[in-house]
Image 1 (cartoon, rainbow, N blue to C red):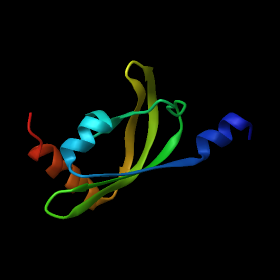
Image 2: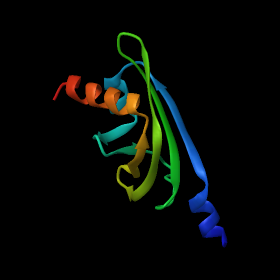
Image 3: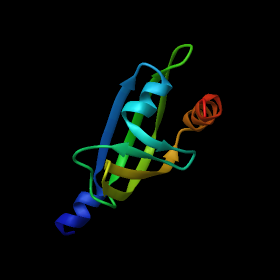
Length: 105
């Protein structure tokens, strides 16, 4: 296995906590959907990198969205990376659905 293959096989943990879902969207993501998320980062990971995702937000109590994804896009302006969800816990999928439904448009 060459170095590029090893890097792609590794999982990088992305773990952040936010005061509420609106802060999460304003400070950290440009776009979130049921299938993926764009994460702002000055040092985005290479396309193909597998990541473990964990985002905690406060609704009526602290809730955590957990799962895995893969970087599918990197861009410079704004700097960051598009991550497609490859798996979410069933609880997290339901929570994400609830968060997206509640989110003001």
